[in-house]
Image 1 (tube, chains in turn red, brown):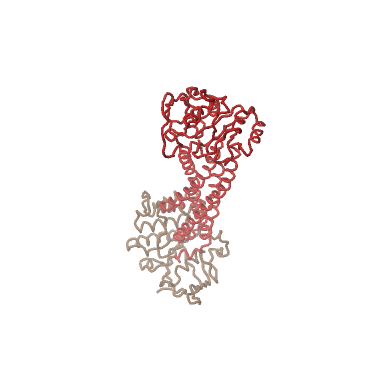
Image 2 (cartoon, rainbow over the protein chains, first blue to last red):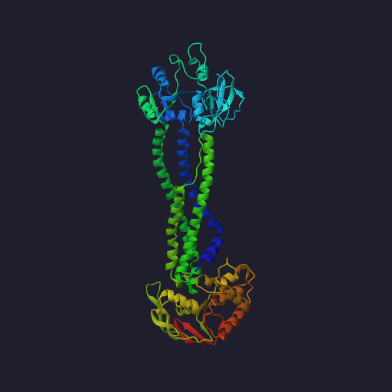
Length: 401
Length: 220
């Protein structure tokens, strides 16, 4: 028994309608699968981005806000960590380095971040991709995707990206090095010595009245306040010890991963809802398409009755109707995976460009399962038109009643 | 030999009652002959053909094909019997427009195992004078389309041909050609039963019955 010649003939007869059905199913699957793949890519991308920020210490406030400022370089105002708590943290012996972070400036929309060489080297994987580390107040290192090249000179602008009333600082800065790619918004940042941030904002040098140097040790007594510190603990035990030690009424300390886990928990619920909605939408679409197929099959009931009059068994008619319906749904589901891959790639590229976070959305088991689930539901729903034709009395159909 | 005996079939009418569709004591079309059935619309001509083809079980009576009582067969076996023993020809041909003449003629081979079906279909089309080179049925004349339908009916070489108003959609010339084809089929030893209003076909019949309100009478 071979239902394909008739199935193909039916598809050819209604090529436009069949193509529309397949495209609709493919788009529904594609969008649903792309959303779940993108959500996963966002998780892994953000987790990767925060990987090298071991422990963040800041003034008490929202950990999520601080994570967005420090790791993802999102603009916004934060309380400064200053005074005795800052001095205590800067003198911490259980950390390989304690890096102050300073914001407040930008260059052509990209953030200018003040910090120390140790953090820059750490984020860059131990060594710069090209050039050298800054060693003077007006020298900077740029992120891997910064449009600035080594040797370029420029003036930073006061104010964070997208803020109004920007004014240029007087200092002319020169690019001396470029970091390796980190897959974070730091790839577009301009990294200056923290002392420059303090100087241009009239806060002193951090090394005492009239003293100038780059990097630690700082003069803790006169060191200005900073939005945050990034600590690199010496060991895992030290990491937990430091986190505990700096969780006080005057400071907060957190691992970026723990904040992300809380965010992921929220996203996790959203993902379940999104997946359920994607499946529900797809099932509703398949049901609507099957209603269309039912109407098509009604048009062909006389043709099927003729086949029965020629000796075709009922099961043959069933097989033609089922194969036709399932063929459309199965093909749509398969093409949907292709559409999902294309959509995911495009959306990832757009989001990566906008956020600076390296996103790579790949289709995984969830998306394949979504397509298979729809195909399986389609296979079951396709039984309906097949069963209706199967049960249709031949003589009634031959008479066209 | 196909024999229907003591057939009674009634259908419900719109008023909630019933009307007699068939009341036939005996109908035994002979092999090698054309048996025609005429009568007004609704007289039961098509119904009798459906009963003979094993598609519509009568409420009373039997249809036998030699020793086989066809309504005693389970549906699957009756389908197989019809495939082997009955060739059906319809007024509107009921071909698949998207398929070529050859694919249409060999269509029954898609639901039954048949070695060399394509070659046989090609040979039948050749005998019936249908141009197989044409890719679409829609490029054929109506007479040619009916001959494709005849080739399809003959694919499994059935001994009985049932034709329901086979010339109703044809012009005079095509109807004359069709008459010649049916005559040839009868000459080959097949039992040809046709339901028709067409005088050309009726004149070519060896035996002519008239159905009136489900009852068979010998036509004049």
